[in-house]
Image 1: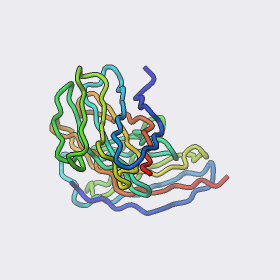
Image 2 (image 1 turned 135 degrees about the horizontal axis):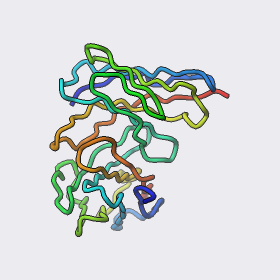
Image 3 (image 1 turned 90 degrees about the vertical axis):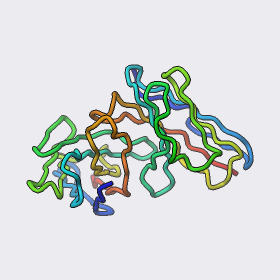
Length: 113
Length: 112
């Protein structure tokens, strides 16, 4: 297993368009997390899944943001009607329960023009 | 969440030891102290964590104060690849813990 994979690495979109990012976690990890990071700041928690259940989503930034993990494996994060303020790095991480360390992917950098 | 205080930036010469401090005076008795680092254009990378005793692994050592209000991440011989932002994060160990709360961290520069 090569770690957490995120696709695409970079995305440029026009304001108002919808975008979807994919995350493939480490296969034996049951938890999957999404974070957002803006320039000069630490990552900010958005949501997490345990298997296919989304156990926390109150930190999603608005109702334009949604995430799924349909079969408890890969996950997608969708942003509808993108705004310039959505420009950021979107990071995915996975873990086995709440123990030990989280493994992060390299992120998807979104630029909204 | 416990509040943490870290220096904004630090410098080290290559091959010298580096001590990165973190204050977490409001940490709860059951929170572990986790350290992550983030290299440029990468996601954060787990470094080490501990509860009360000092911890060592292949990447670093973690020294935890007896009162647990502070800790120090020790890189024994800094290399250019250690240049990164280092984050200190108190984190619970229970099944209900899930959110890593990142501050701004310490940006470590390594001088050749």
